Image (tube, rainbow, N blue to C red; front, side, top):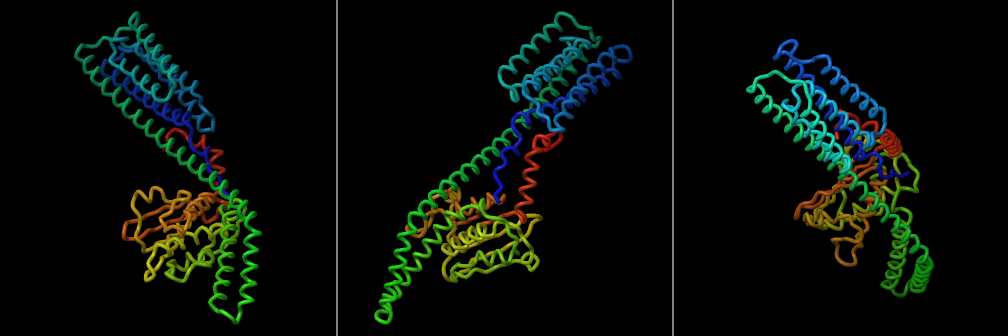
Length: 441
């Protein structure tokens, strides 16, 4: 059972934009209400038309509350709807300014906040529409407005405060929106890379299946001839008998490799089984060389813990990592295999004592047909196939290497692949609902 890439779990651009639009509108509403309270206290009763001002702020509050409830219930807020809400904000701002001095009100700077945010979250046509609406709104204020009886010195201070507030709004929200969008684009790129690797794996498995089919007959013939040679040479030439045995062993290895590439390159076709961590590592070590020795480190609690996953595919992938570590380590050293449990995740470390790798090599490690081994020692498919297996069950693989100090490969896989898949599916269905105001991007 495989866990496919969860593209839908990544919030789309519209959802991210809606989240930050709602946050901006809440900040605006709080700021408008606070400004009205401060101005009313400073100017005294009767200086401001409190009832109309409160009504305008309340209208903005109700519209934003409706928008937030809609998003929390899993609804999608289209770009058109976002633009209409921003148009409503411009109309409400125009109404507030009309009642409080018109173009002479220092908080006319807030038109720029709407325009700046629209530039980031809306397409050009909607942005220019809001620019024109802001221009028309300010033009109306030039023609008619209610005067605000305040001194010039107070007006200057108000302009200074309004400039600071507008600048803070613009910088804060634009930085946060662009950061959220950058994070989303990074996650989307990672999902696309995972899909591309899975597609390459599928192509490789198809090619391997064809190769296994085509090579089955000649490999069988070679094995049969080697067995006949071994029988005819028995008791005559021990060296040639050993050569014949070696041929049969290598033919068997070729068959095993082709079977692994064709049927074990991924976990999609394998049913889940329940094994202990100790049994999982025992199976991974089956067939590994005796030199350099592999030393295991894990607590008794971890060794007895059960995991539920496609055992054959995972153990083959682990065996590939162990073999690579043995190839990289000098004969007089050891390869360390350790395991720990982190909540519902099993983390396995495979550490060698080899020469390590530079940052340039680490950046390419795991690419198909890229290898640091000597010619004839490998094709560079082991790590590629291992990564594909771990990612297909919802896990991951990471590399940490220092030149002349060795390399550590850390594998993380879910303790229960099926349970992780169910949670992933639930997260996909509710992904839009979870992108709600106040949540972290």
